[in-house]
Amino acid sequence: MTDTSPALPPLTVTIGLPPAPVSPDVESDLAVGDPAPAYRGGTDADDAGLARMIAAFRVLQVRHARVLAHESAAQGLGITDTRFLVHLAAAEGQATTPKQAGDVLELSTGATTSLLDRLERHGHLERRPNPSDRRSILVHLTPSGAAVARTVGAAYASAFSEAVPVAERVDVAAALEDIGAALDRRYRASTAR
Image 1 (cartoon, rainbow, N blue to C red):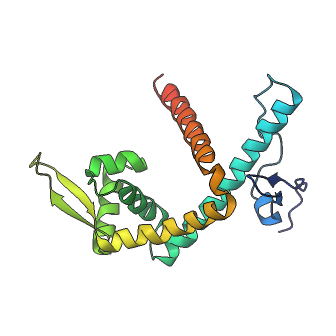
Image 2: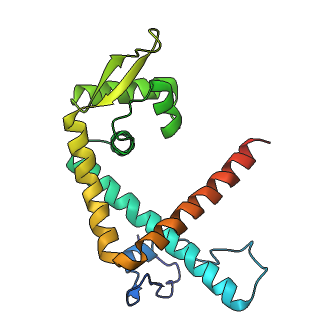
């Protein structure tokens, strides 16, 4: 099948480095058109800057999805399995309940049980009785699961280290945290209706 959609103009993303053009394979995954059609309140520079940020975020999402899929497959896992192992590893030794696991991944009870069963079979996590509530269990990362999380995390650490100079990392982290918080506020407001 031949792609007849119009080509996107090259997009460059700069974070302390010279602009890097977006490859055609990523461009083909992105929708053509104004990435911020509802935003019309600032100057042309504001509009261009916002449009560029949103386009850069879309490219980042595509590339993140590809890396996560590749790293998951290399570990013999599904994407959701890997996301949960990375989540548990980031909790720095704190266990979680199956309900909390399902909430984090937005999974049903049945899907969460399947996920935990799969990861336990692989030896990446274990279920233990909850000492503060004998009716429930806690999910703990095993050394094998921690190794998977470290391997996947290393791919991201390498990319961030390559792309963001040391002097800019705190500012970039703060910007990402602020964007995440703003998206979370929007999500919570829309689901509270």
